[in-house]
Length: 264
Image 1 (cartoon, rainbow, N blue to C red):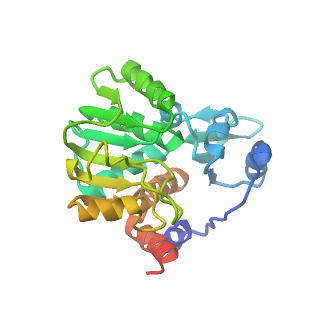
Image 2: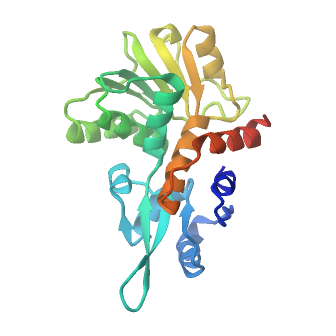
């Protein structure tokens, strides 16, 4: 999607993928700095490690506690210094996708969030920052959900938060677990405790396969559904703007992603 965006804007830039072992992450960041890269994207398991490896954290990385985008900035000091600044575009990418792909109004919404890992934590904090009315956290390891709930109570006291399934209806069910990536995976939702008919909309962060078992069941139950392709595009668009300082051609990027992932 980035190379398609560079081409659309006539930029002589190139986006390349590198597999880096976590123990070599610091060396990789320093190598990119030395080679005058404009920036980097990082995915799991590097997002948390990179927090301690950049020179400065943007407010987004401080709030969400993870770095998925780095921008190398040339300082005007003598001798010339190149600083690595860490950003997080995942949270804004999720919120943008929820609004655009599901027309969900987050302010005042009731949300059931499945998963309390790295993606779940970021999603929970972002939803709280968007002033959802109620947030229900469900995770296989309850202590992780309780830890995030405690964090939200301190940072966002106006948000009503609880651990466990709700009894009433919700505006949004959001899956932030990895259950659904593999064909043999079961559903991340315990339908004995929560019926999909209780959710107006269901969003699955997984985008490959395009329709997980959860989304197929949600569609059959009459829910509005969307997968994580929009989040992928939106977080990428924000990273593009951080590096280039230009508005991202989001439609071009989405077409490129869908062509690559789904062959359409």
